[in-house]
Length: 485
Image (cartoon, rainbow, N blue to C red; front, side, top):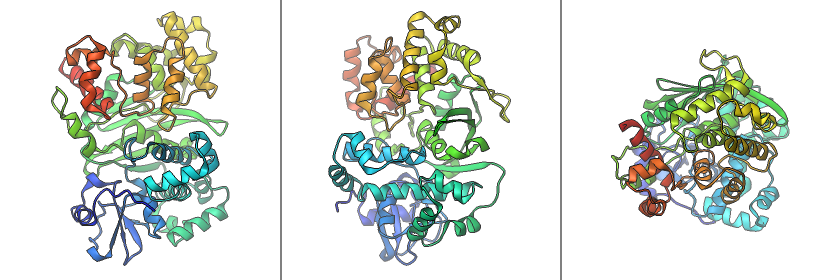
């Protein structure tokens, strides 16, 4: 089986000795004397070189019979971005597996192969070549690590954790946990988790991280009632349909720079979907980005480089797309005003412990069914109303999915087929809802101003050296314009 090594063993050991957070999530070390695998940032005593085995992924370490460290907790390490895998199809498959596990979706290998348009055999072959393990092993690792985090960070009953992690019975969950980690879930809960009033999840990222730029981006666009930026915290309401039932609540994500983590507190009402909450926060704050790959490209931009570039996305794909449509050909301030009116008129009131969080963003079904004249009274022109309702109907009907494991080309094609959605809108939706790192809205007036040309073709030519991170370049150029005005 072919391995995709990030570093040679000696360089990997130096990263472990230095506890280098830049390699967090890209490197794991299995210690033969303990049978445990760790993140490179683990604070326990550094193991002897001869006792170390190095792996690119958690799934590889677990396939080699190592169990996760209870101290550094590999389940909270940052994941891999869109371009980390050498095989696009295998990378897409990995993201589909992660999305299914965290979203509580049942997924089988034949279903995944059909979704990707390949045979089971081909999927197994290219997945093993790119990720070093079979799709089934990768799926099992994702399920068990999600369960481990829920057992450690939340007071959820073990049975509920089993279901939330994708196991159809408590017996199978206990057996898989015991076989892989050599202790049962109840032991982990007894030893590591204490009862707590609210859920507090830990999510790690690789430094550097430009916290100021990301929080500034959200602050300049925050909509009263739905979201709130305060100090190092970003808070918001969330609601969506899960297994046919509507769930809604709030979350509070707080940066802890000294630990390179975001600590997330979620309302008890979101307990059944905590896996999806974690996934949305990871995507929304771009916690899986790798600055070692991105920052050298950002240094090529014609504006001062800011270390730790990130691509802030929306935590709800439909909401993000609506905001992009309302932002067509208007300023950030004007777009925020229109979104605010939409929330006030069609949003659902919700109780939260934060005075600034009072409403859920209107869902796709509600906007699709709304009277166009009612939307028009908000100051939204007829063409935008038509675009909004076409988008809402497509999302509500399941024709378009807006998350980072959605098929990129097919989703862009479906978006462009909707009335009132051109290439600029599709590219910005791809950037902020699908988390596509190379999205490039060439006709964006901000980019043209920053690059000194009104020629979209020239704008694209200038950006060629910034592939495959052009979406990060967009954010850097926008930030420069917004903060230097």
